[in-house]
Length: 191
Ligand code: SF4
Image 1 (cartoon, helix red, strand yellow):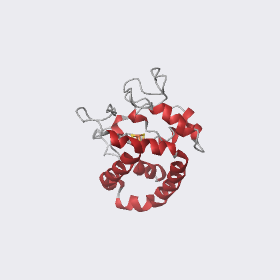
Image 2 (tube, rainbow, N blue to C red; image 1 turned 90 degrees about the horizontal axis):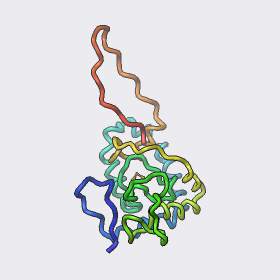
Image 3 (tube, helix red, strand yellow; image 1 turned 180 degrees about the horizontal axis):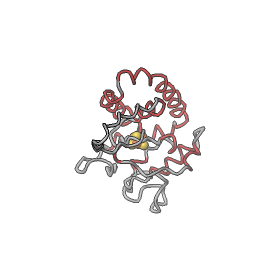
Image 4 (tube, rainbow, N blue to C red; image 1 turned 60 degrees about the horizontal axis):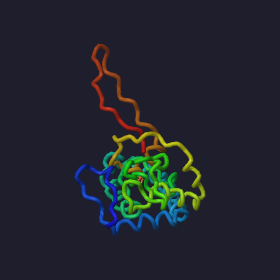
């Protein structure tokens, strides 16, 4: 039976049903069309950003992440890492690699192009290259990706696109002299 890795899922979550697998490969096979769609979609997100800001991006986080999880989960087996790099990975989600590698394959790819850990599964990065060569900006795959920020896990990258184009929020007021500022929890970068 074809098994799907779950390294990026919470421990104990069962692997996805094997049938969910096929659509992710369809997305890679049609990476050029998906890329063209995504470019238009991103422009739409940018146009909608001011309206979303009026509603409040934090307030929209849960519903947006829910919709994103459903749509991208179906199309890419998205694991909601919160920092999407599909356009740089041939539309093959790197979080489906059991080692969560975001900068190319490990040294264990089998001779038939399958994964070292899950022998039945084509290597995520072999598929990524197949998808990338079909895409207009596919050679972005050669770029180096930063280490993953786990604080963004589960957050919507669609809202992250909006956050990037919106002006930064005004800095908080300084506390009166003599009073120390309250400690704030760290906040991750935009998706
Ligand atoms: S790179 Fe992250 S956000 Fe993009 S499809 Fe994969 S898990 Fe989802």
